[in-house]
Image (cartoon, rainbow, N blue to C red; front, top):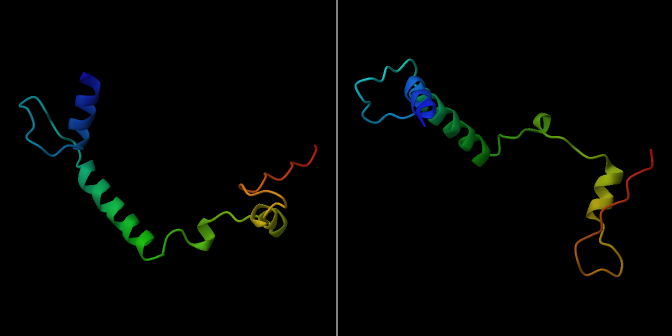
Length: 84
């Protein structure tokens, strides 16, 4: 697809030998690799996600999800949604 080829070439997503007609305007690949490496390191070291970057359930719904259902050997049933 010509549009994908131009998009990748213009942004510098690929760093192989460029055809004569290619003009690169950015080096997105280097920035993307750097960003993903930093993210992976933060995940491995437990720095991401932080508590501020996490959604938490209220204690009631969280307990409902964790409580085993009586008489069931399978996964717990989903709690009923409150009527609107």
